[in-house]
Each structure stands twice: as C-alpha cells, then as structure tokens.
Image (cartoon, rainbow, N blue to C red; front, side, top):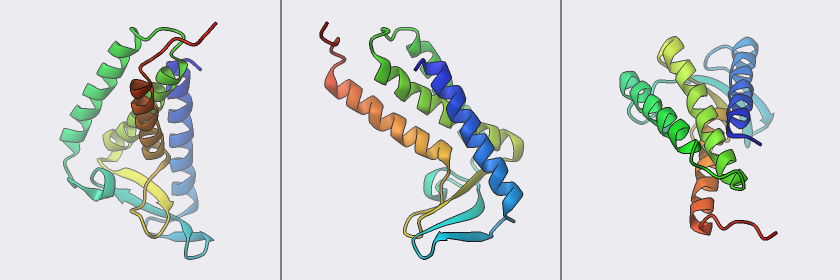
Length: 148
C-alpha cells in the first residue's frame, strides 16, 4: 500500500470516527461497550498523550508540521520493496494530520477510546503508535531486500 494511500485512509477513518463520536455523545459522556473494561468516552484533550503539556497548541502544531515535512522528504528515498516502511510512515503521517486538524480547528484533540486503566485516546494516536513500532521494526531488520 503506497504511503499516501495509507496516510489518507488513516486520516479519513480518524476524522470520521471523531465526527461520529461528537454526533453520538456529549462532551464528557461515556458509553459502556464492555462494562468496566472498554467505554467510548468523548473528551477533548488540550495536550499530548496522557494530557501532557496541556494547552501548548502552538508547539504541537509546529512539531506536527516538522514531522509531516520529514516524513514527506524521507518517503521519496524509500525503495519500492520497503512496503512495510512505507506503511509505517503512512500511518504516522495520517495520524499526525488527524490530530493536527483537531488542533487547528479547536486547539483540542478529540479522544474517545477508553479502556479505564489507560488515558483516553483516539484512532490517530493508534496509527502513530503502530506506525512507530513498524518503523522501529523495519529499521531493526535492516531493510534487507526480499529474496527473489
């Protein structure tokens, strides 16, 4: 899957899920999916992961522009056979853009996935974390070309 397709799909799913949550729930409302284990809880997060660095919106916007620029510049150098690396960067790009749109729109990020033992997060956050793990995996593997 090309990097930009992965990024656009990630962005579409992220923004659609956030719009659906805002439509279905009021801010602060929680809907049990699996009681005491998993809830959909609509919050607006002013910070990064775990609410760290709350209300540092300008910093997050600038940092996201740096990440997006780096991903787009580096993506051009990735050989075609490094599909997993391209996917990882697409997930990171799409997730970063999803949260950036929220910050540009309101200064806050919509979060809704609530496992009760972990801070509430969203699908963009999932994409960034999965993308980062895949990126580390691919770097660790050393980018060997597949056998023919």
